[in-house]
Image (tube, rainbow, N blue to C red; front, top):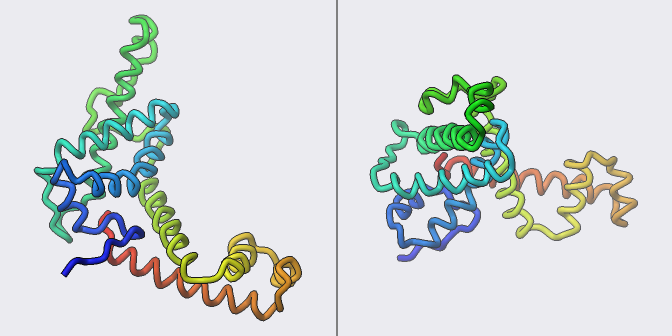
Amino acid sequence: MTLERDPFLPTRESLLVRLKNWEDQESWRDFFNAYWKLIYAAASSAGLKDSEAQDVVQDTVIAVAKKMKDFRYVPGVDSFKGWLIYLTRKRIALEYRRRERMKGPVEARAEQLDWMIEAENLPDPAGLDLETLWDQEWERSLWEAAVTKVKTEVSLKQFQMFDLYAVKERSATEVADELGVPVAQVYLAKHRVSALLKKELTRLKAAVTQ
């Protein structure tokens, strides 16, 4: 039996297995779509410029591709998230080293960063907690995936009512007047969409691999 591909759940454990095949372009595209924003956010928050953060994304994905065949995922023992954070942290360190090499020797010495010496022990600039940032971005990614899925399950007007009332925090009366619906429908839309989002988030968190 062939399982239906779920575009809203791109980081299942099965994806980690498929990534061991370099020729599986669709799985690598799923991986990139699922993780590039997290890697970019980590690099950007570490003080890198846009172009440098994009280089970190590219270099990290390449590092994953090279090392994926040796990665072993055992739920409860190994953490894919921890491994990916480790690779991202190293790429951030290397990007700073690359920046230093492009400077003149005098300028480079004046701005030498002690924390660049050991990439494995790279402290987060300005007190950045990379793991906390990662978790925040991950939660945002799950939320966006849940919203995308739920939008396919409700009418456009229902989602508009939910968005204006629950997300943008407009009053129920204002939303009802703007959309030309009874106030009771605004409350019902909020209740229904909220329940669907909660259900979808629970499903995603139970099934995806960080």
